[in-house]
Image 1 (cartoon, rainbow, N blue to C red):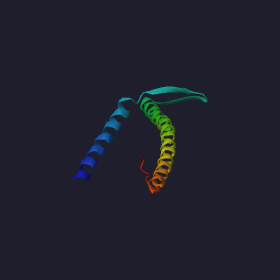
Image 2: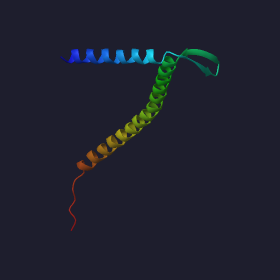
Image 3: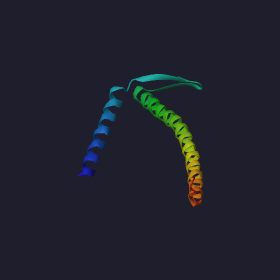
Image 4: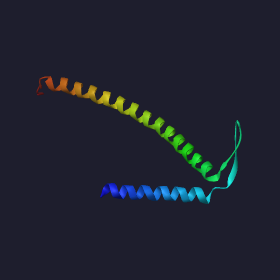
Length: 97
């Protein structure tokens, strides 16, 4: 049942994509640093979407790497404190009078 629902959703996404491409088939000129190219509007929009997604993933990966580095540093500190606590638990208790 789950596979059927996934297949139906995939067909709907493909149908939406095709209708989007047909509705935006007019050619547009895209000027970039190296030149000028004429492409259908739908292709230009999809290319901009993909480029934006890739740049977003790149920015998110930098943040993720920073958080992983911080987590490793904190794990090392926790291990150090746990070792120190274990050593302190081994010491005999002295009563104060």
